[in-house]
Length: 622
Image 1 (tube, helix red, strand yellow):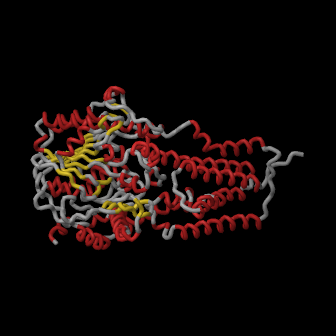
Image 2 (cartoon, rainbow, N blue to C red):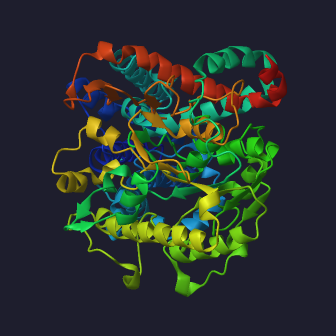
Image 3 (cartoon, rainbow, N blue to C red):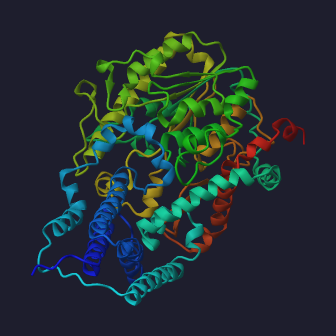
């Protein structure tokens, strides 16, 4: 007589085993996580199991076989999809999904090729266990046996799951003390508590951050103001006001890293224009991007506000209603017409809302440009027509004006039209890196035509032109190909150094010079405002004037890494910049506290919306 499926401990065990083993295999094959010892490997192996046991164990309480089976299949699919979503996201961003990112749905339609580039047919294997489970439920093979489970056995099951969870947390704390307070290091969280528990913890953090604004009051500002005041660097007396009254044109050069400067591929110069432009500009050769998950929008946030981005999500989405004290507002107070220029959908990265909070008087978006199939590729309008049309718009602007411009062509996955190819692709296993050099070269040419157009329009001699790279273009997922190009291994030290991006300030009448002080995007606001003759003393900012003799050579990354004049802290190791080798941790120790303090203070300003309590006029009088 054929036996009916009941109670189903074996089915649940099979479901748990399938998902557990798949998760571990994904860890090992799809995420580039550095495992240093056997304890870390053991933690990685067990960390998904307790969560999976608890979630699937709910199936014991279904009285209906049909309802229970649907629950197990549905939950197996959901967790598999969540795991796969992280895989796809990791391929592009070398990072894990956070809850705020899931609400950035207005960006998804514009992601286009960047997302589809990360899919492949073999990805169906990520759901192989779900398919197999479905077949087991449908055909009920005789070799699968199902046994009833008593209340005592169910109790033992859940106690075992709980014990395993506490064991996991205990071992994780031994391996990584204060793990749950180091929330900027998502890879460390996933390595120690697992993907699924990480997402639960992320939900907790999101709830906590939402409560912070409601509970915040002005008293929290005192400590932060004191830190900002102590961190203030007096302007360079010779250069303060050197560009006073001039237009400010600031170009965010998409995905451009500094390693392409003064370099070649296949014997061909990658950035001939930028190489020449740097010689005529204040050229900062040790300048780093400091963005997080918000990428280009984070770079905008950093340069406008001298505040760090968040470790989770993008401030442009999560806190667009906050009060800010932006560079745009400071310049408007000094008679500037402030505007942003970006030939893309105005809602992408929530710019239409955030730009109001930043205080731009005008946003020139896709509706202000003539965009068609002939002048577009990849993410949208090509850089050359974008600059050509932008130069025409600038002719109509009241002067002095401040224009922030965002390029598009050199964006992942770096597709291009053949007629725009000026150099050959690199030859490596990474199509992304191979194409990258071609699109960088195109953007370099676009910048050249833009400067020529400014000269023709009579704007060049009365404008400060600032070029800065917004974030990396080549993630650590392409380290093997990068090693081939660089001719050396991409260690954590080399990877940190690859986060350098161009930062050039061209001022008519000011002689170009190379400046090697270590700095980052958080330093842009005070540096530019001081050049324009606007003092920033009393402002709540975490950057310093890069031209000041008091500037400290220091750049903190959002993930906790940092760079100083002599050392790099990366991969939890202190590296000597002279040798590129590991050195005594004590050399980096004093800066670990500084980096943590600045990131924490900045987070408190954003999460608590503390600038709503800030009176800049009162601060300047003190």
